[in-house]
Amino acid sequence: MLEPVHNLRAQIVLIPDCDIAPEDFVGLTEGTFDQNQVPLILAWLGCRVIVPTLLSRSDEYSGLPNVRMTNQPHREFVHRTGYELGRHPIGYEVQKVLGVVDWMKSQRSDLPIGVMGHGEGGLIGMYASALDTRIDVSAIYGYFGPRETIWKEPIYRSVWSLLYEFGDAEIASLIAPRPLFVVANEHPNITGPPAPHDGRDGAAPGAIFTPAPDAVRREVERAKSLVKSLNPAAHIEFTEVSESGINNRQAALDFLEALAGDAGVVDSLLVPKPDYTSAIDAKSRMQRQVKQLVDDTQYLMHQAEFRRKEFWAKADASSPEAWAKSVEWYRDYFDKEAIGALPGIELPPNARTRLVYDQPAYRGYEVMIDVFPDVFAYGILLVPKDIAEGEKRPVVVCQHGLEGRVQDVADPNVKSDYYHQFACQLAEQGFITYAPQNPYIGEDKFRVLQRKANPLKLSLFSFIVRQHEQTLKWLGGLPFVDAKRIGFYGLSYGGKTAMRVPALLDGYCLSICSGDYNEWIWKCVSVNHPLSYIFTGEDEMWEWNMGNTFNHAEMSWLIYPRPFMVERGHHDGVGYDEWVAYEFAKTKRHYVLLGSSDDAQIEYFNGPHTIHGVGTFAFLKQHLNWPAKQ
Image 1 (cartoon, rainbow, N blue to C red):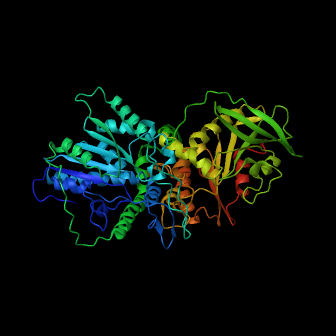
Image 2 (spheres, helix red, strand yellow; image 1 turned 90 degrees about the horizontal axis):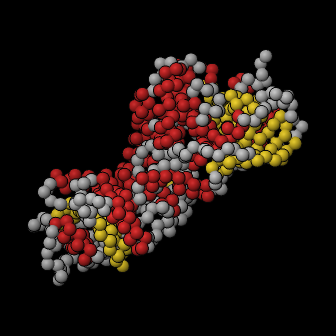
Image 3 (tube, rainbow, N blue to C red; image 1 turned 180 degrees about the vertical axis):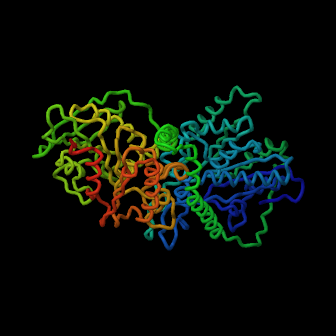
């Protein structure tokens, strides 16, 4: 804080880019003083100036030394721990700014308040100004611009459903009619996260480049068009300068004039160099900042179970009928607010098939199905040869995991230690099987889909759900398929599908989750366990605010009353037996209390991350009535 000795005229929150320490920004460290430093100029002219600390892009404290360290920027590390719990580094830092505004108002409620920010500080300042009308004047340096390529930016800027309603112009419209200065100048050039080093890795890709001035100008004009009918008229001013950061003296004086009237006589203003007498340990302060926010997310992680109980308080479990009626609100919420709902399908399946396998017990066909004009579904259908004329048999949809292909599951010539040709095994036992290709393949290439989808209030599973919906329609229309007996069985990422897709599509009459069912929130958020997704390169796992709404148990409640099973290997590194058992107890209790105890089962086996195919095969035979009981 810079505090004028006399004649306090205004209060200003100045937010530099996150990689600039406050003491550097105000010229308190060796080699940082400059006569044009805006904080010093404004303080000398009678403004109380507070410069907050933001999380930096360094990776120095991203991890726990006794668990694992990563190369994730601090901002990404906090993003990962908070996203599943409805928390975000942007939100935390906006709250910091608004906390400063609270304090400023408590000190002098009669004084105007301004916010200026550059780079990441410009982002935080703009959001804070949009949210709090006590901020009288705002200025954004080197950040404002079109957001359609936000998916290319660092993941810690990804905000669920942001572009569903807001670009920068729309956020600026929330600041209007209060004055807003948009300054097109250089943003720090961020080509990506810190390079992997010393065993640290896992950071998500993402770069930041200075937006072109013409693009900034167009976004400003769009903002003006949104508020052109306001009375009093909105004041949105665009300026292009060459300096980097907030170091333009004239822009600062224009800002002060808008905030407090006449800036005073400043032509020959020479700001004296500060007398720096005390040492500030910026590294320890950053460590505390990271730790405080991570500690908060870990506290929220353990509180999430209680928040979910509050969220589910409207569900009526007094009877199966009452549950079926009351749970539809939750299913709709899960669809629209957690997964993200694409428009309904209007195209017919228009299936194209070709024979690819001819085995003694079955034939195999490649299948391509239309979903949307530019989206298709693909898979392999295995049809037993002994189906009688007019007979209708059950289907098991067999889902592969991460980086898997349908051939791993349904090609009789492909051997896999994970899948053991389980679609082929089931076909040999008389089931029709279908192995769909899910899009989680291609390493970071498929993760781009998640990065593009999240700001549009969509996710990877938004597309998967529609692909399965069309697949079910096609399967159910085959003359030899009993549409009421189509079950789902997936391993690993296919287990994630087993939790989400049958919860939304009742065309699946049962679901088996293999190698994935877990205390999912802990898996996504905990920094104390090396198996947590916090430490991996799988940067697409987090789903906004799921910790407070749906864990795996709650997803299984959406599957009820249809049978549900978990397959769990004792040596499966996806989770711990204790986590799985703790979460499954909630699934089992739900089925028991509503009179369907036998319909929720779990099988533990002494093995790794793999299809075991013992208890699950018996479960399929029982609940799909195969072989058909006379």
